[in-house]
Picture: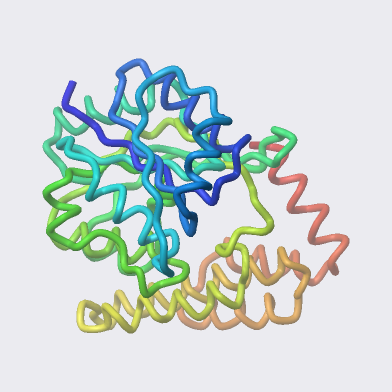
Length: 298
């Protein structure tokens, strides 16, 4: 098996980190593991390591300063030395065959970015939805939105990651989408369709802040503006307003949700967008009922 460095950024959440590390230890092919403790000092790292039950060698480093999640990932990339790099957020878990199947896909295709499907769950373990990786973006379609998902689902070739300078530490959110855009300017993607990542819904996570998402989605668009043609820009605007419409509606702000969904329809009329718009007219209780019913079908 080609060597893999696994980068696990953490804020020191011991129980979640323990669970994430155990899912790495359970991999059918053993990788190199690097835990980056964000915003800590040495004493915090020592205390965290002492409390963890880790059955295999793991490298621990700490990040000071304000590099955030992107800085923690970049530091982990620098510390590792394997040919491939995988990322695992500390509140996510992998299924045991995740790395083995992704490495096999890498060796079969030679592509520098391999991703898989994701099963999203609540803290109680109930499934909110299952996202299969059945559509593989190229350097054009990735400009319209993040169709790959969480970095926890990604395996990447180190030489490509280093060539694009890793994650943009100036983006508080949407740094993963920006990373994929730059990666797919250099290499191609391939997918393992099955959901091999268990991603826990974290209502406190920055990515759940809709206003931050609205700001940073457009910041990524502006950063890569010269890459867009008229057709791709229309696709982006349609997806941009659709994404924000869903997120605002899910947060309970149905008025702003409807406004974005209407703007999405003007850019790219789609039956799915029209359906979401209709459901927002049921009110907050009705919208939440339909959303939970749909999630329960996953």
